[in-house]
Length: 509
Image (cartoon, rainbow, N blue to C red; front, side, top):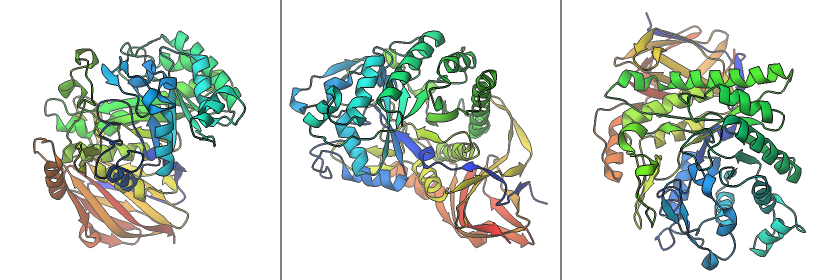
């Protein structure tokens, strides 16, 4: 008898998978920009100073959208100081990360890099130390036609055509006391509403993201969403969510159940947003921009912003080194996001390069893939079309941090041509067998990949990443993974503490 049963049918649909679900994030933090995506003089730098080897890995990762320039950084950022002739720009002290920002990369450099790489930009405006006028001015600079002050400045700076940026964040984590310009929910809600109103007068086609709670653990969680959306509901399209997960004191069971915590967080924010909509008797549905998520050893490896010394020259900050276990959790978090595709069209893995990132670099040296790169790139490649409403019948286990959590999780997508993406996590420390029920539908699996957890300590460098990938990441022989088949049922074997992805075809029979 199988340990779990998963039911699939092509007619059981949850929602369209927006490609922006596989977005990422570049903040002016540590080496994310300088010696990350940008390093003039590097052997692989292009004529603009951006690293070609990094851009190639970004393409392989399958990132269609990147959020910029922050993050905490944006709440002290004067965007006007980072446009125009580079030699005339002045460095400034970024208070968020206590780093001297050289302003060598600004709005034009980033947007043109994104354009060359086929990446949609997601821009954030400063609602910490600045406000309505500056937000509207930045939008006009990016999207305005000739004949107005800020659009003409862009043209004078060498960019004739508007960038056409569609997705805009109204600040960042404004509920957090650590945020420069932190505000309470009423202050922020009023400011976001006025900034959003002005921005939509500049360009009515844009989508706006309003700040939700920085985490589910914030004391104002829930009430923050209710208050902020009471001011902004009719103006904004998305409310943001941020969440990071880490292993505490060797508690692998709780860590592997991080997707359950993410699932509950999403459900609660959706409920909060829908409650505001119901109170307003509105048919509009606010969706989620989960624009910061990842494994981050925030409590055990990061000293905190206030304990950082003032630094220059792209200091090494928050460069977590990942394990196979971390990569399994990242894969499972992607399962959760896919299972909420109806309400989560936008997400951003934080971050893209060097800072808690799937891609790492060395100045003047090589770029390499961290273990977390593999499940993200595979999911981005295989998850297409529509997310199915997958029914999972599996036993639960008890965790110390998240209560009861299912031992097996699953998500599936199907494209118009019948291409299937199937993603499964085994959170237990033993092999499990799963019956995949697909009565009334023909299923064929043609490709498989697996990430298994490890017990190795993390070590910095490409050699460690290659060693973990070799030990933990593999291409599966589908015939070995499928251990049984009968009419309408396929039985799979899942390795202990593993994330597995399959490609195939799926259609009504």
